[in-house]
Image (tube, rainbow, N blue to C red; front, side, top):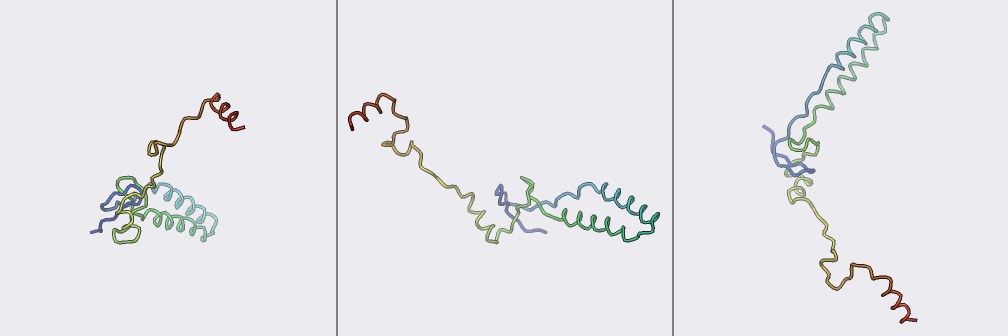
Length: 121
Protein backbone atom coordinates (compact mmCIF):
# COMPACT_ATOMS: atom_id res chain seq x y z
CA UNK A 1 0.00 0.00 0.00
CA UNK A 2 1.30 3.45 -0.94
CA UNK A 3 1.92 6.09 1.68
CA UNK A 4 0.00 9.33 1.63
CA UNK A 5 1.56 12.14 -0.34
CA UNK A 6 0.85 15.83 -0.79
CA UNK A 7 0.43 17.72 -4.03
CA UNK A 8 2.57 20.86 -4.16
CA UNK A 9 0.14 22.38 -6.67
CA UNK A 10 -3.30 22.01 -5.03
CA UNK A 11 -2.17 20.83 -1.52
CA UNK A 12 -4.30 17.67 -1.69
CA UNK A 13 -3.19 15.02 0.82
CA UNK A 14 -3.85 11.41 -0.13
CA UNK A 15 -2.67 8.53 -2.22
CA UNK A 16 -1.58 9.34 -5.76
CA UNK A 17 -3.11 7.63 -8.75
CA UNK A 18 -1.03 5.98 -11.44
CA UNK A 19 -1.19 7.86 -14.69
CA UNK A 20 -3.21 6.03 -17.33
CA UNK A 21 -1.34 3.94 -19.84
CA UNK A 22 -2.98 5.78 -22.70
CA UNK A 23 -3.62 4.26 -26.07
CA UNK A 24 -1.10 1.72 -27.27
CA UNK A 25 -2.64 1.83 -30.74
CA UNK A 26 0.34 3.89 -31.93
CA UNK A 27 2.71 1.27 -30.53
CA UNK A 28 0.90 -1.56 -32.28
CA UNK A 29 0.87 0.39 -35.53
CA UNK A 30 4.61 1.11 -35.26
CA UNK A 31 5.38 -2.55 -34.52
CA UNK A 32 3.36 -3.67 -37.55
CA UNK A 33 4.94 -1.12 -39.91
CA UNK A 34 8.53 -1.71 -38.83
CA UNK A 35 8.08 -5.48 -38.69
CA UNK A 36 6.82 -5.41 -42.27
CA UNK A 37 9.66 -3.14 -43.41
CA UNK A 38 12.31 -5.23 -41.72
CA UNK A 39 10.93 -8.50 -43.13
CA UNK A 40 10.62 -7.23 -46.71
CA UNK A 41 13.92 -5.32 -46.74
CA UNK A 42 15.92 -7.69 -44.50
CA UNK A 43 17.07 -4.70 -42.41
CA UNK A 44 16.40 -6.21 -38.99
CA UNK A 45 17.93 -3.34 -36.92
CA UNK A 46 14.80 -1.39 -37.90
CA UNK A 47 13.06 -3.33 -35.12
CA UNK A 48 15.02 -1.25 -32.59
CA UNK A 49 12.86 1.79 -33.40
CA UNK A 50 9.52 0.38 -32.14
CA UNK A 51 11.33 -1.31 -29.25
CA UNK A 52 12.77 2.03 -28.15
CA UNK A 53 9.44 3.80 -28.63
CA UNK A 54 7.54 1.25 -26.54
CA UNK A 55 10.18 1.34 -23.80
CA UNK A 56 9.96 5.14 -23.74
CA UNK A 57 6.14 5.01 -23.71
CA UNK A 58 6.06 2.64 -20.74
CA UNK A 59 8.67 4.69 -18.83
CA UNK A 60 6.75 7.94 -19.35
CA UNK A 61 3.41 6.52 -18.17
CA UNK A 62 4.80 5.05 -14.96
CA UNK A 63 4.34 8.35 -13.10
CA UNK A 64 1.96 8.94 -10.22
CA UNK A 65 -0.37 11.92 -10.41
CA UNK A 66 -2.54 13.90 -8.03
CA UNK A 67 -6.12 12.57 -8.05
CA UNK A 68 -7.51 16.08 -7.59
CA UNK A 69 -5.63 18.21 -10.14
CA UNK A 70 -3.90 15.53 -12.26
CA UNK A 71 -0.41 17.02 -12.05
CA UNK A 72 2.84 15.17 -11.33
CA UNK A 73 3.54 17.23 -8.20
CA UNK A 74 2.94 14.56 -5.53
CA UNK A 75 5.73 14.41 -2.93
CA UNK A 76 6.23 12.51 0.31
CA UNK A 77 4.81 14.10 3.45
CA UNK A 78 8.18 13.78 5.20
CA UNK A 79 10.27 15.35 2.43
CA UNK A 80 11.45 18.96 2.53
CA UNK A 81 8.93 19.99 -0.12
CA UNK A 82 6.19 17.99 1.62
CA UNK A 83 6.76 19.70 4.96
CA UNK A 84 6.73 23.09 3.24
CA UNK A 85 3.51 22.20 1.39
CA UNK A 86 1.85 21.03 4.63
CA UNK A 87 2.29 24.57 5.95
CA UNK A 88 0.02 25.71 3.13
CA UNK A 89 0.51 28.22 0.38
CA UNK A 90 2.88 31.05 1.17
CA UNK A 91 1.21 34.34 0.41
CA UNK A 92 3.00 37.67 0.37
CA UNK A 93 0.73 40.42 1.65
CA UNK A 94 1.27 43.86 0.25
CA UNK A 95 -0.20 46.95 1.81
CA UNK A 96 -2.98 48.64 -0.04
CA UNK A 97 -4.37 52.15 0.20
CA UNK A 98 -7.16 50.90 2.45
CA UNK A 99 -4.56 50.03 5.12
CA UNK A 100 -3.09 53.56 5.20
CA UNK A 101 -5.76 56.24 5.79
CA UNK A 102 -3.25 59.12 5.33
CA UNK A 103 -2.29 58.05 1.83
CA UNK A 104 -4.12 59.76 -1.01
CA UNK A 105 -5.24 57.41 -3.72
CA UNK A 106 -7.27 59.71 -5.93
CA UNK A 107 -5.25 61.98 -8.18
CA UNK A 108 -5.60 65.66 -7.48
CA UNK A 109 -7.77 67.62 -9.86
CA UNK A 110 -5.82 69.66 -12.40
CA UNK A 111 -6.88 73.00 -10.89
CA UNK A 112 -5.58 72.11 -7.40
CA UNK A 113 -2.18 71.16 -8.84
CA UNK A 114 -1.93 74.41 -10.79
CA UNK A 115 -2.83 76.45 -7.71
CA UNK A 116 -0.26 74.62 -5.59
CA UNK A 117 2.46 75.11 -8.22
CA UNK A 118 1.66 78.80 -8.44
CA UNK A 119 1.82 79.12 -4.64
CA UNK A 120 5.19 77.34 -4.53
CA UNK A 121 6.77 79.65 -7.11
